[in-house]
Image (cartoon, rainbow, N blue to C red; front, top):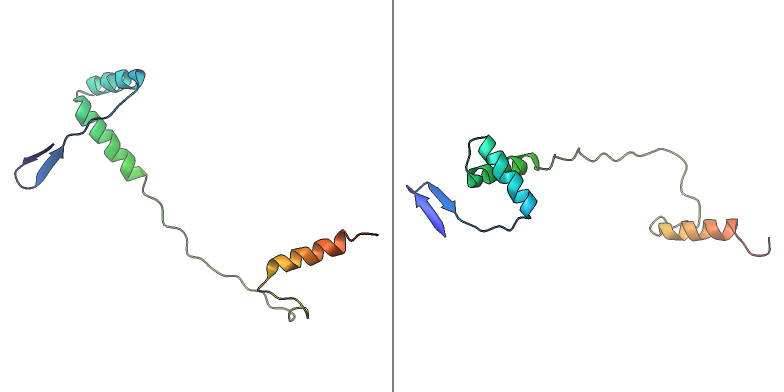
Length: 95
């Protein structure tokens, strides 16, 4: 159910299920702060959502290294082949 006061403020009623111990803690904390349970839950959720905003990731910077040309026969579009070649060299049978 939606209750609107004026045309600007709308309050939506909802039902939540809480474990008994959590519900007691919420009632106790709300009373200690002189707030209703609804106001306490709304305030707590608002604070949690404001804190949960993800921080912007730092910009990606590609680091390149100058050097010699790629080794002949190495396909840089198939990096797993490099692992296979390395494993075959390192763990070759009969050695």
